Image 1 (tube, rainbow, N blue to C red):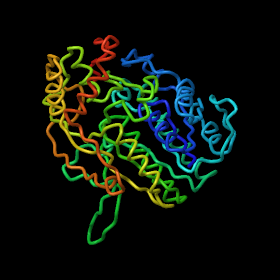
Image 2: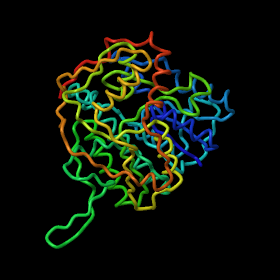
Image 3: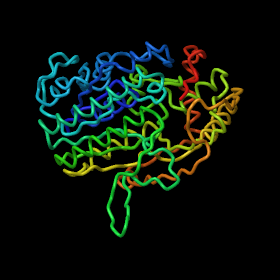
Image 4: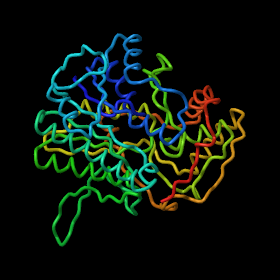
Length: 394
């Protein structure tokens, strides 16, 4: 299959590219190095240096013989997006690459992915909104105008739902009102500008599905942890970007890094905030199964992409247990919550759809976390305590 990955330099984008390339698909990745540049601008922590996309694609080709085409461009420019569908694309690697026609599947990761980043101030909020919404809108119109059969797989977030006092269904809710029934998108109540932009993404694509019979799968993903995949073990230079800071680092990755350098685990408030989590290997599985079982024309198919739920305090206690087993004196420190969010709340999401189409979950066991400790501790000397927590408030 001809697969286009938007945001191919990111935490999820690059592992996804290798995953599909290894299985014989023709893969093209696009990125403008937004996250790399943001990490430099904000001086945040990256556990190890990550080569450019062109360099990683060359390494991948040397190790496997498979080719991942690389395009460096800003997808908020509609002509850059349309070039990926009409053949007016400029490849950064390999330079002699030929256009193979419009993609059969587009995997859309090309968004500013951080809630704290979006809440710094109005400028960062504007960047988040303009980037995320323009990329999604440009993609929607490119598919409408140039390739109606293309299946769009968009990474949403469980954060769109918030923490309602009812069970969270998989994207949709049956409503009975004054004796009549209908089905609507499950009510959204985001807790940051980033999460609000993801709600708007869903609304844009739902519009495209209704108006033009586009085919879309929206994956409402929880926080992801891990960095090792079957593909990255071929060469450490193929590992994905790993952040441990408050802005771009996800909570499990952050806690493990903090434990290794003796930084007390930052539990916000009581630590009762409960969310759904998944291993990076399961992100790849979920996207793969979504590619294999495409949405129909005129269908917005929504999956809740999590494998299990934890409170922040439960994750901290698991990190402390595993860390102490490995000889680390792990401390847990409750600090004032810098975010406006409920710490004691009901949380019961439905998440069986992806299991039904063949995903086999990896659960966060002590052994799995110990494996992550082993990888992170190799880069202990690179960890900077001063960038772990800044207390961005909203």
